[in-house]
Image (cartoon, rainbow, N blue to C red; front, side, top):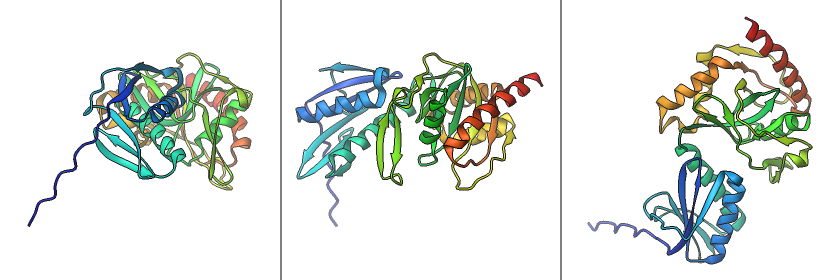
Length: 284
């Protein structure tokens, strides 16, 4: 019985590195045009939060992704091992964008990344942790339209002191039954970007449900942390640090859980609810 021959890793000669939130990632290819598009993907994914270094030494077996176009397919390698292949250039670079963001989110230094939408309101952050397709971007956009500051529609980036910073990529809006995505800036929505780190005032656990009635349940800090954990990307790598930061958030914010209906109608109601209930919580 013959043994299967191990797959030989694929490495590429040219490339560049970028550093974002303390995470260093390499991108390599033998195709100049693919590297140009990879740079654009990095800028799109991280904006000013990524510093790009050209012609840097790449560590093939480290956090280096290789890109190739062969036999009618775009191929993505990590550490020399192929992890994805397909014929659509658009889907390929969309996937690369997602993979790079996840890599940074999981391994960021001295920060906790939570999959969540984030806005700033009266000097406090409102974050709503949720998985994809739960309506984070839609709710974020409606809040920005009526005056909230835009921080992120993808990740709440929590500092060691429990404050939240910006993750300033454009909002990814889905149209026509979630079949088409368009990147939209806060300015295009008539809103503005948050600029400074701010404390978290409310953590909202919600998702769109057609015809849902707002029935808020105020959670204890412990129950709130348990709700956040499934959306905390750094939990697997550094659970002790992640829990320490989440505890700081939970002790200083109100934790609310309820389904919601239409985001446009809900947005103003949510800000009013926060204004009234945060003041009450601080008085007790």
